[in-house]
Image 1 (cartoon, rainbow, N blue to C red):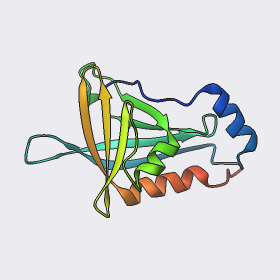
Image 2 (tube, rainbow, N blue to C red; image 1 turned 120 degrees about the horizontal axis):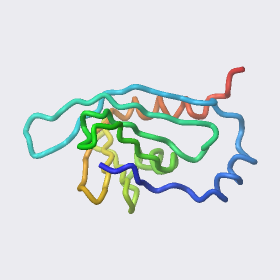
Image 3 (spheres, helix red, strand yellow; image 1 turned 120 degrees about the vertical axis):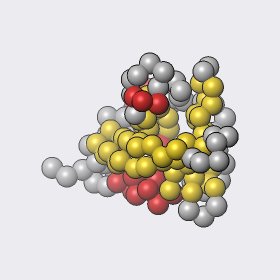
Length: 139
């Protein structure tokens, strides 16, 4: 997997920051995901979902270092709107694609020069994370 992904242009972030309501300064949600492969048994992996108010249009999905050939955490940054939309219908045309898989699962597909990773999440966990990214910041 690669750390590249679709990032919104800086000009879009400035506009969104100026018009957005206050959001949580930062949010991190630890979830368990399933790596989908040809193996009949899927592999569960711990994943961190992250959001920072300094980048209000972006979310991050961070995979543990043991999944990377380089032995480092693997972080993907992409539009929060893509994750939201992908819980309702297939979306994405670049490095990250998201779609619902039944009523309780969602699939996030990551494309890099090294290959493709397909990861399944519980929709409830993704919705909980997204809700927290919109929660008012506590001071």
